[in-house]
Image (cartoon, rainbow, N blue to C red; front, side, top):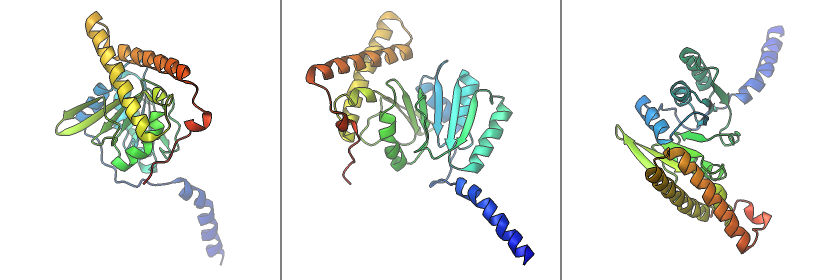
Length: 248
């Protein structure tokens, strides 16, 4: 009887840890190192950036960003085993002062301070994340390995070893000046992103300026223009800024 009571007590004590240890819906497949390098290059990672890798696995993207570019990086994964592995890999790479890994549900995690977001998730998960990504500050760069975002067209794509990486530069604040519907948001974001990217590339070429910072500045110009236009047309009611569910 005493043994049974002891076992029961141990199970009760362990119950909270069972509840905390959630597990992913998909099988972990690591991004090849050469694709990791290409994703970081495509995102134009530079000093001062803060990178979040959503579904960080063994931590290779966050670790590579910290080691190669000296930036702060955060990996978020729901699998405790992956978090332990990533933390150990960061120690081996000597970047624990720049990198941290958090065991969280990426759909509930706070990554608003990111300037770069990297993904290697299923298409359905990308779409589920899209409304959150569209609300991030203008100029945030989102890079996805292998999977796109449906009708939110990428600003750039690249291929390495037969694998595709997609880049989006977020102009979400521009879109939210005019609409709250997801398809309209995506369309406005794509147009604003194209204008800002094209303008930034032209200025960079014309005046021999660094491309990444110029494009980010152009997003600021587009945002100010959108804000001025929105004021001229009339304010958007606060209620309309709430997301409108897509029809299934």
